[in-house]
Amino acid sequence: MEIVHVYTKDREEFGRQCLLWDRPTELLADILPDQNLASNFIQRNHRDQAVQAGRQVSEHQVNTERFESDSHGVNHVEGGWPKDINPLDMEQTIRFRKKAEKDESYLNSIQQLGSVTEYCSRQNNAVDIYQEPFDGWEEVEESPEPPSAKTINVFRDPNEVRRTVTGLSWHPDGGRKLAAAYSCLDFQKTSRDMSLDSYIWDVENPNRPELILKPASPLVCLDYNPKDPHTLVGGSYNGQIVYWDTRRGSQPVELSSVEHSHRDPVYKIIWLQSKTGTDAFSASTDGQVLWWDARRLSEPTERLVLDPTREGNLDRALGAISLEFEATMPTKFMVGTEQGLVVSCNRKAKTPTEKIVCTYDGHHGPVYALQRNPFFPKNFLTVGDWTARIWSEDIKESSIMCTKYQMSYLTDACWSPVRPSVFFTLKMDGMLEVWDILFKQSDPMLSLKVCDRALYSLRVQDNGRLVACGSQQGETTLLEICSELSTLQKNDKSLLATMFERETKREKILEARQREIRLKERSRSEQSREEEIGREDGEDDPDQLITRAESDFYSQVEAELKRRERREEEALREKDVCEEKEVNDEEEAGRNETSS
View (tube, rainbow, N blue to C red):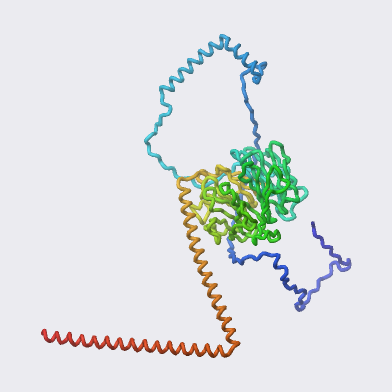
């Protein structure tokens, strides 16, 4: 809705000169704070953030002309039959074989081909084709290639009004297809000409999508079913959940009702590990996590309100923007919120208050990405504000590792499914960064400029070789990572396990030290408060002041008397030692004279 303000003015006042003069300050309004509104807000911890100005850098790029290609395939089933013979008819093929075997030319051809085949088989038996000619030679270690990545394909939004690629999902069987969700998340920037469609792309054909998904509202996220590659589920901008079966075409098979769906856009939806393979759960900024059965989306099977007070109040709920579920931990899941908190939850808890286990606070803004390490599930990666952080489940006060603050905002991140120490991050300036924490913790191994616009979504193929990045301009760039960053090294797991254990111990020691400091400060403040209270109580009663003054005076006198007695005893002891020493010296001098 556009807000219009109409300003009226007489025609004779048009073009009149503006006259300005000095005037004293005037208070127009004084609005006092309303304490009744404080219950509607959540108090945030104060944070201090330093700002560093960086130098300006200019960068130029040139794109070559686009080459359009078209793929054609031929499905060859069985050939070599005459035109009048149907290869699918068993009787015709058997009749033709019997007729061909009785032919004299057939027998002659078999005899000639048999001699050639016999000669080749005897030659193979005479020569050892499996012999290793270089057996026993020392292997020469090749120098590792520098980290690199190259662009394979770019999938562009075919509509005139370009939309942001807000979600990506790889096909579970080999990663030959890539599903992309398109929507516009800018406030009141959606136009009537904007398309609602999302697409499934063939990796080898960037010219046109393989399938068009037609939802009722733009898709914000989507996910392929790992058990059934023909089905996928998506979360819409209006809060509805959509279910597709690609064998049935572009239209959705199931759609959740508006009354029982989310109130805000669905930012993340993930398939669950279940016997039926049709269970999923979704998260939205309305503060709810909903569980669904894709066979019946009329209403959710379960509901959780992310209220930090554990009262189930939706007005105080934290807006969810990212989700994490690990199949090896079927009862646990984690939620990243708009307030910078990561909420750890237990689905199988008996009461709603026990479902929220704990929280991790470490980001200044929304947690855009949240993922557990596929090799070490107790450690997880988060991205928010200008940093990427690695956490341990045992440490809730702070992260065990953190990147330095970047010049541009981070929007997404994920672990490599092949190498446990490698993860990828996206930035608002169009940069893709690849980190290897075993090699370097302060800087990325590889920084690549993907495009000039902001990057918003990131997905890595299961083999770790291909990386898909979605941009604000509707472009999905497919990159191939070098073998050094996509191949498991020899000691990666053991070295990373040692590093995580060392950093966890260090954070535990620091956390215990901080706890001791806080306890000391609390006890000191309580003691000073008690003294102030006692002092205030004493000022009201003059008899108590006199009694306290007398006791202080006598205690000081007794302490002074004891101090003087101690000094006199030390002086007497020193005097006795000196006299004894003089007697010994005189005796020794007498003995020396007698001997001489």
